[in-house]
Amino acid sequence: MGIVGGIVVAAWALGLLRDTGKVLLDAEMGSTIQTKIRQAIASGFPGADITDLHIWRIGRKQYACIIAVHTTAAYRPEMIRQTLMAQHELAHITVEINT
Image (cartoon, rainbow, N blue to C red; front, top):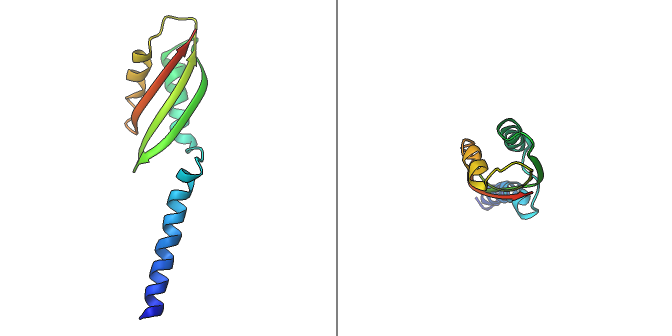
């Protein structure tokens, strides 16, 4: 029984390391959510260039994102935030606009 228990604990520990390793090392999130964000900005805000984009996993299929946008247009952070809220995976969005 001790050997079986050891195997179960080892399998659990390996799974835990795999799941938390990306978070602990601040690994870049998958390109799927990044692509969706970039497409939403490009299609909804002509002339807006993403200068900085950070995405973190904060839960199961939930992400937080900080985005910096450079534009000469009169876009407000609330406008970009509302557009990105359509991405249901994004639970927390911080927007910075530089002109």
